[in-house]
Image 1 (cartoon, one colour):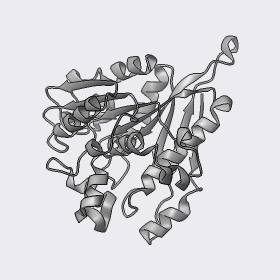
Image 2 (cartoon, helix red, strand yellow; image 1 turned 90 degrees about the vertical axis):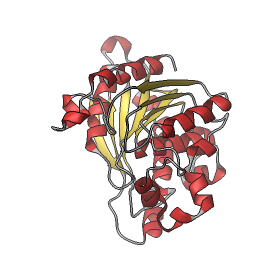
Image 3 (cartoon, one colour; image 1 turned 30 degrees about the horizontal axis):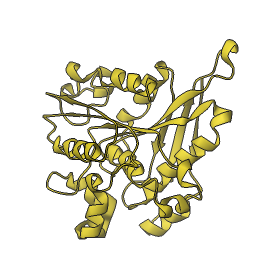
Length: 280
């Protein structure tokens, strides 16, 4: 296996201009499986993981532990440590778009299926991943990362208890951290609300949430699911009857000592996502 971390330098200027302050540069960590000698040219699907953190930080609980699970299922993995507050929209989205194009451009070298690149996000990271699914076809986004729209297009999305809406059921902290002074503007709030932005162009989606999530209400996923179905997007959705927010793998490995983050009923989501990727 090859593992490395690289700073995303190409769009640093945008970060500093938007934030007006010096912030940590975005980076990604790649986890690539080595092919055995009998299948040197095997191509694998890849997943880009966007951890949560309310656009305030990037949660390690939803980073490498998730990547290792995908590796065990035979997929390459990338973890994006994207820009958070005081950086504002669309800085993090540009970083995800850039990374998607970067992976696609290195697909032959890294033994990746060009049409098998999936974005996966947790909580606010789910909003980020979903935003790429909503905005990949926009000229302004492709131009910002010096790519063609098809280069930044994800082939699928795996969204885990995602932040979706700026409406009644919003996670206010994510809205304020991402939009800053624009958090009271209707245009910005509509742009944030993925249920208003997805359409027939949005890629195939795997979505899960817990009904008892008290931080990001399940209505976020319900609103998104309704919009996707209305647009004819292929959707697999799982609602679990119990579980707190931020479960990650819902086991002891990612609970970091917090008992409410261990939920056996939810632990099969990663297996289901792996099967979904196989059939992508």
